[in-house]
View (cartoon, rainbow, N blue to C red):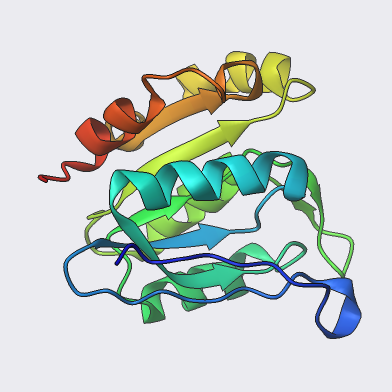
Length: 166
C-alpha cells in the first residue's frame, strides 16, 4: 500500500495537520517550511508517487538555526525546500537558499538530495540567485517551477533525481 499524506483542517495556530508515512521501502523525505496548499498539495502527491515517505515537516516561519537542528535530527535522505521567501516569527528574513547554505555550513557532509519548488511569484528571484549557490549544493538540487507542476514527466524526473529504484 502506498503511503498517504492527508491534510484535514488545521492544527493549533492555523498550521496544517500532517500524517507522517514511514514505509521502510520508500525514500524518507522532509519538508522544510512548505508553501501554502496551492503548491504543497501537488508537490506532496508527486514525491509520494515517486516513492518517498514523509518523515518530518519543519513549519513555515521556523528560523534557519532551528530548522537546521530539526532536519539534522530527522532520518530524511531527501528534502523539499521551497524558495518561499517569508519572515520568521522573530522577523528574520527566510528563504530556501539561505536555509540550504546554513545547513551546508553546519553539516559535516551534505547527503541530501533537494527538491526546490518555485512559485511563479518567486521565479525571478530564484533565477537571479541560483548561480550563487555553492556547486555542491547546486548539484544536489532539482528545481520544480509552479508552471510545470502538471507536467506528466515530473514523477520520473523526481525519481531519477532522488535515485529511487522501483
